[in-house]
Length: 159
Image (cartoon, rainbow, N blue to C red):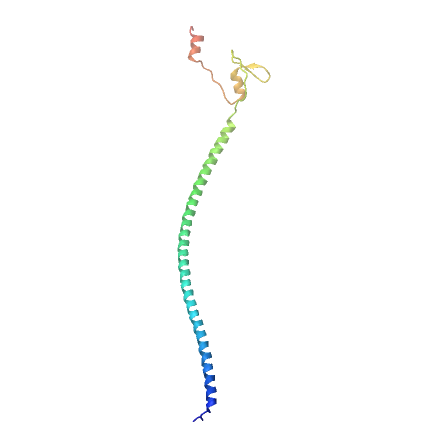
């Protein structure tokens, strides 16, 4: 059995124990408050993570929709490119045909001096010649002669 302490020692010991218990209580209160804050912080973080995950799921769904739209648009662009290539090929054929036709065209331009009575044409050397000859020399046109009904009546009516 332990020997009893004298009264003044017991009082000092009790005071020390009370102080120690007060310090422990204060520390437990601090740790408890800190733990409670940590729990609240963890709950807040969990709620935030849930919200972020929800937002990410929505963003992923929207991304998938956009990717699908992009694939459709790319297919449409591919089809348009094929059609454009075909149109360009047709246009190139037409341009080639027009260039070939242009090579065959000779044009008469400017003022051509012509006699108002006999219809002869004056050339660059101031010589007068037949209209047909001038046109054949300055273009790819050729003439065949015939007679119109009015001239037939006027020039060959009595024959």
